Image 1 (cartoon, one colour):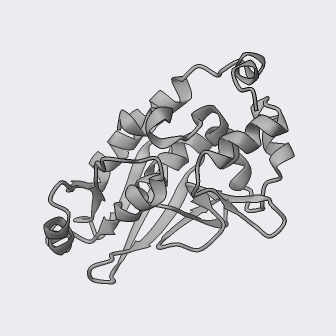
Image 2 (cartoon, rainbow, N blue to C red; image 1 turned 120 degrees about the vertical axis):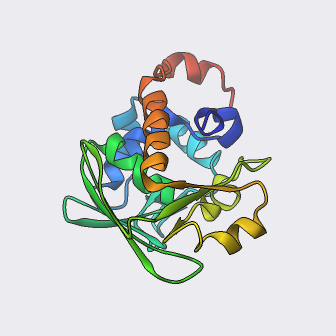
Image 3 (spheres, rainbow, N blue to C red; image 1 turned 45 degrees about the vertical axis):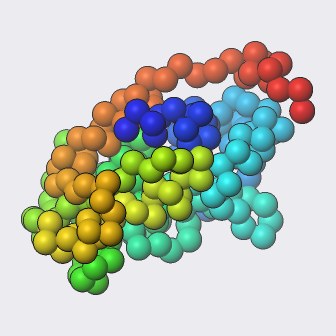
Length: 210
């Protein structure tokens, strides 16, 4: 979890990611200029920070449509305020309700059995898990500079520990946690993200010559 909040590890700019997630939650592509305004950054700086995350998704007009939270369908459906969105990984679905300050309904599919997993999260935390035995897989890859293929694509919901056995055999360094425990890990991660000091855009821009 420490590595996920370290920009040198993931290239994610956390003070930029939070306003981006909140804009994407409206269900529409996000103009770079709108993100710059929300984050208190220049457009050029925002473009540079987004480019540092090669997995960032854009539409044909150059608008942002995904970074963790995405408008493109994935295995992980994430519905908030009636808006159907998606995430890059199972852990995202448990982190983003706190960052967005909204409850969410989550539906995913086990990559092993193909069976659905449904989770509800509100301000108090996880309120329902179907089936109750569901777990979340986690990995700790050597290199997370391209976070989606190295980390997100291996973080799934499974209906049970038994359902995850094939995945565990294929990922010797991996582990699975109950949904409640994964949520608690995500809550700790969220606290770190929200408590991280915002950089001064003027100072930061002076450190980049181009």
